[in-house]
Amino acid sequence: MSDYTAYCSDCKTNTEVVEDRASGDTICTNCGLVLDHHFIDQTCEWRTFADSEKDDHDPNRVGNVSNPLLTHGNLSTTITAPKFSDAKTDRLIFDTLTNPDKILTKGFESIGAMADRLSVGKIAKIRADEIYKILLDKKSCKGKNVKSILAGCLFVACKETKLPRTVKEICSAAEGVSIRDINKAADFIRKQTEIDIIASSGCLNGSGLVRRFCSKLGMKNKEMKAVQEALENCKEFDIRRSPCSILAAIIFIITQLSGCKIGLGDIAMAAQVAEQTIKKSYKDIHPYASRVVPRWYAVEDDLKRLRRP
Image (tube, rainbow, N blue to C red; front, side, top):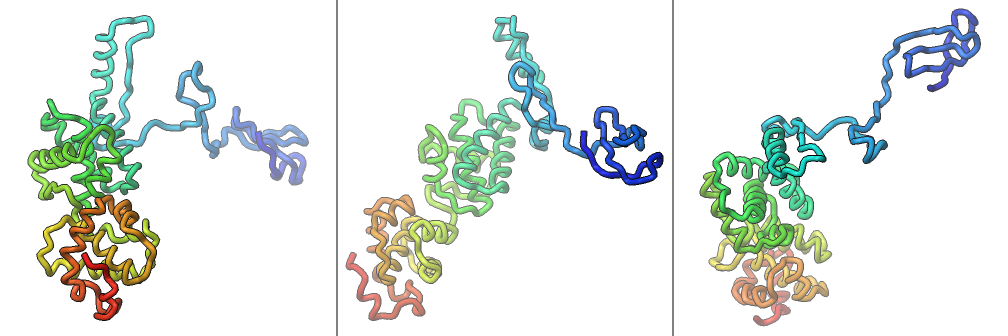
């Protein structure tokens, strides 16, 4: 019940009234006259849909969010076998008949967990779900490692939506899956779905990683912009290294010119590239340093401060 002031026709004045939500009546507290009846309760109806034995205070009002990728939009009911039944076959039959999307739902949950660990946006996550459903509809996942397929779906979705996520990052978010497994799964997915994305061990575009890597190292906007332009200038030269290793080498060059006290080990950790690999890429880029580093950032004399490879 709740109290407030309203006009009573019997008392001929504003008096305190009370709302009886059970009956829907508004009652004058002075004379007892029912001023209104069968009113609509506008407040939230917090109630529980769980078993009373487990939790009587579960504040859920509705079920799961509707998912158009599922047969019943994720609004189906799952009926399991009675507690007194020991037959595992009966339980399996009940689950299969009442929830045909059980495998699909588990896959979506795994993809969602990996996407959360990598802070991947909703667009890439939904696209990964779509790719996984396509594979299941074609029944092409039989005999395949499900974990690697799910990781491969997210990897391909990130590349297709141009999100900067490397295969190493996908591997770190997936449990019990190697980089080789993800690359094989991504190549398999590309062939099955005809998605025109090259499943390589590197990243789709190094420029998408500039802000993330530079932010991890605490670099300023000026240095970040120099790294971005230098990475674009590197495309003019035939440097046969992965985008991540080239980016790490460029960051190493810019940090030397800016005087930032960032070690090679810190750059290797941020870019998830071995120090030796960065040194090799640095050796390939060093001869072109005067044409790679933006002129507004460093002149010829400044480049003499760079370490010899």
